[in-house]
Amino acid sequence: MTPDPALPDSRNADILIHVGGELLPRAEAKVSVFDSTVQGGDAVWEGLRVYDGRVFQLDAHLDRLLRSARSMHFADIPSRDSIKQALFQTLQANNMRDGVHVRLTLSRGMKVTSGMDIRLNQYGSCLIVLAEWKQPIYKRSGIRLVTSTWRRNSPQSLDSKIHHNNLINNILAKIDANLAGADDAIMLDLAGYVAETNATNLFLVQDGELRTPWADSCLPGITRGVVLEMARNLGQPCREMRVTMADVYGADECFTTGTMGELTPVLEVDGRIIGTGAIGPVTAKLQATYADLTAASGTPLPFSDRGR
Image (cartoon, rainbow, N blue to C red; front, side, top):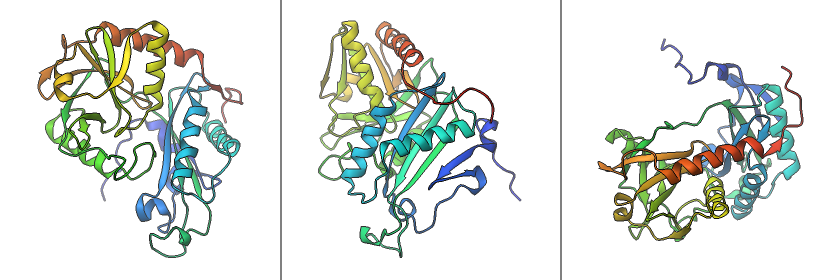
């Protein structure tokens, strides 16, 4: 018998997970083989972080989740309040208030038989709230990227503004990174411009200006939007623009953004050292400002810090 794999955080062995209205132990938290997530990745999702008793940017994430569900023509979309209630219930049951990442998934639900026709989904949608003890996944000192051979979706094929669960092209790009011994991979759009990485948005600093690709073939990330707003509030010149790999290689600074990893410096891309090969001043200032923001804002959890 193969031994159980070691979990990144042993506390997650005993977590309770909300699946379709029930709180279930990790080993029992499952969906049907007829669920649309299994049948075709037919679901939408969001990643959240909990900082010191607050859920950061909760309403912005729920806005995107609900927009994505409407774009996918879900027939049975739970209310914002019911999603919040399931989230808070899950966090309270696990006594989670800090250092937590939550993956919210809304599936179209079970089908009466296998098939792509959404009229087969007659049981209603299924909400999954998976909360784990999880710190930011990237090294704060910086990461290395490579350019993937796999392209990011364009609106011609699948609009990246829909935060859907069908992530095969991103997974293939991550495989490119793994095989190259890098942390993640940059994905280009169909015209050869930089879109994002397989998991995060990308920012550059050149000649004192903060730059990021247009959100045409990339997800308009919540953290991306927060960083653009922070920059404007700080008086930091910034703009969205078309970005090429030559721009990346020649940048003075580069960093990624995302809920899972926050703001992460990029020190090397395709073997090219970015800037000085260390965290740059603009990146460091934005990191500090972001940390202040997550410590001071967010939706408070409506329960005490007592154990369950």
